[in-house]
Image (cartoon, one colour):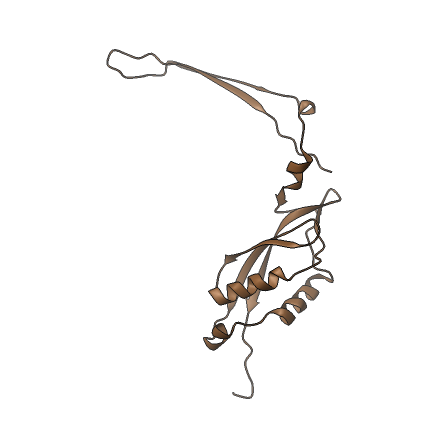
Length: 161
């Protein structure tokens, strides 16, 4: 597992500030001392690493069967909201969610909205995604933010035209 370390720096700021009889303060000198601990002396927490949500990893999460299977799944499971259909509302809703280490989906949110009804449908269908192949970093499954556009487009009924 990739170990995440951080260098701990301890800084002391010593400032000499004389106060004049007119009650104005002026900084005469300011010195910064910094020290750092060697990386080998730092400890890391497996729990802290487990809580990290990556934005980019060596192997991004995927839907079983690939992109085409994901598109087919979305097309089969999206239920176009009736009010959006009646008002001819179309557009691209961009959703973001966390793919967990077990392939489940959590924390679904809309980061680009079109219409409240379309947004809610995009969230609903994303929450139904199951069994994603999790992202991997250094050969281990990790939590990853995943951003995905969902395009809502009404089909034109050729019989009416």
